[in-house]
Length: 320
Image 1 (cartoon, rainbow, N blue to C red):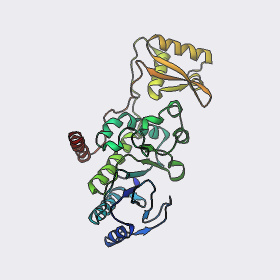
Image 2: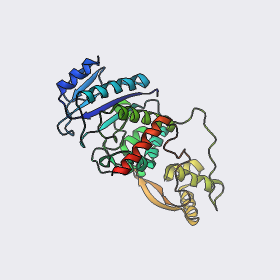
Image 3: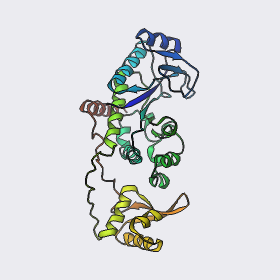
Image 4: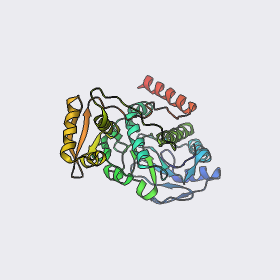
């Protein structure tokens, strides 16, 4: 993994002075501070009102494998010092996203949503679905406004707050995407496996430098521009009428007639509005399937991480 990241570990079981001594004993630069969102060049211990009887351990910007090793050392030291986690604790990971395009961010969110149930299976019950107020389901904000967003700023505005499993609200200020789903832990294996999984997941979502030929998707009964229009719905689920007309050189009444023809071959398309502009949303039908992307959650994920999470899924399924 070769991406900058930062972690926030919410912990209980020890006080901040004990944590300071434990981390300084292994030569980690760390300070005790009041609650703040400032990025430091050192680890900091801060209060967190969402954690019952504990506090938050926040890293500086870490990078790649060296950063993973530092995170491993910190988790191990805290574990050895007696730290633990309860249901109110989480492990949050920020990744530098300044090199990502709007399309990359859109793919990360949609792909996470598509595989969310599979990810939920290797999380405790308290972090699944939308059961946790602080890490709600990604699907909860995948509405017409988000699907029609064409810039990262539009996607950020379409997300109603930061308490989702994938949080974009940190992007305008810090240039990061935050992942909030993981439960609190001081297990070095869990911390590093989750960071590595997410880093590799992001890379698998990036647009290739050399674009591959667009996949040809067949729609029975549709040809030419009608098939291309159906493909627009396959890609984004929501299509703004103005954008459709601009792409095909149509007047609005021609665009509406084209939608009628799609409905006749079985696509269920509903009229919606996006920021006051007329648009259409694909509800079901031939094109209501994932965009032509790799479907496996494990694409691009290293073998050791895959094995770790498959084993964890099996264990959680056996004990729940």
